[in-house]
Length: 342
Image (cartoon, rainbow, N blue to C red):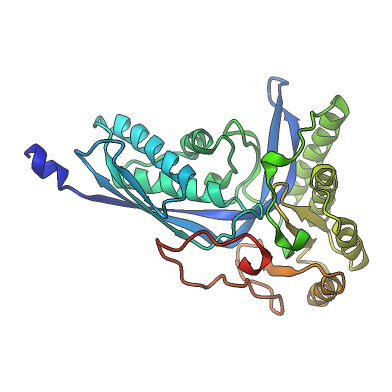
């Protein structure tokens, strides 16, 4: 094949990645060597996600890489890193290509939209090369692309993940206990600028408390105890309020206690929060309706009601995911992160 003919070759790959609904637990933990590491456990959210299509153009320069929409800079870095990784594995020179992203994840609410873009991109590039990449490799590339990432490359597995290092601190199990979640947005859904938040160094007492919550979460996953999981999530959310300071948080926890919910959880890097229910609790539908009415009475907008159980069915009578079915295309700009985007 001549060089000119080789430049005309097109290899197309696709990739998908889910998002999440904030965290169940986030803090500072000890790794196997006793070293402190920032870590988190995310709450899977069925439905929204990012999709990527990558068209490889062999024979072109590596910097001949285009991204649509053009503002996805983290995904662009991920594409370049993935091309270099895959080309080396395939014994080929790195080349350019075109990346196209679509999806329906609101930005700035703490749902992992950028990580979802990055993982979908890496998977699409790997697919174009015909090379499977294990989750550990995807995590390494994702951290290089955006400095810190969520563990979405493990597709819902319950892991305590060191987000700045791209490694698992503890594999807790195949999945968290099933939950019914009434999602809501504090602060009118305004995005949280995590870089503007004050940095608070963890004390020895903080680390001991996070390790205690880690042990409780380990037991909750092992026994399928949604109530115990809710206790862990509420404690983590309360500690997160030291930085986030949402004025509606106390009202939210009061609602959860009054209606007998398992607890609350938050997106530590956004405005998204959730009231957690044990699916096996008696009178579940009635509790969910009471929760929605109470949130409305407190001026806390509900976003969506969903279950994390394998059925992936949303609970009837919950508010729809506003705009979730809006057609998206490669030229669709990132939706604003104010509440109407939900």
